[in-house]
Image (cartoon, rainbow, N blue to C red; front, side):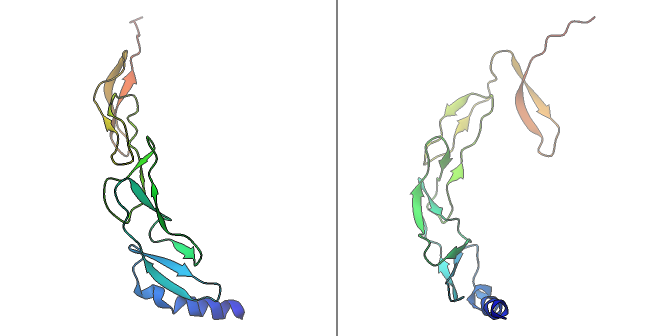
Length: 135
């Protein structure tokens, strides 16, 4: 019975009237819930936890610095840091910083060539050359 009371209170509370795309759903031990607007973080930082999350009332919401060569944020926004692009075997023109994504070139390493792999995402990548002589 207690579960049903808590659930009915949760289901009929404010969350139905706020968009989780721009808010946190903060819940309290007494089954109260509230929407909390996601703050904007400056470039080079990302919101944590992820905007739209359901969080306990004691959760600290903050802008955390993005990690060098791992994540970045190039906008003042409610987004979390995004992962840096992986260049694969292509040359790197510019490394990923907390403020900008990695930039990849179009050069393949020695003994590789450009090829297109037909898949769900038509990927173009540098593939190793295979030397096969007619037999």
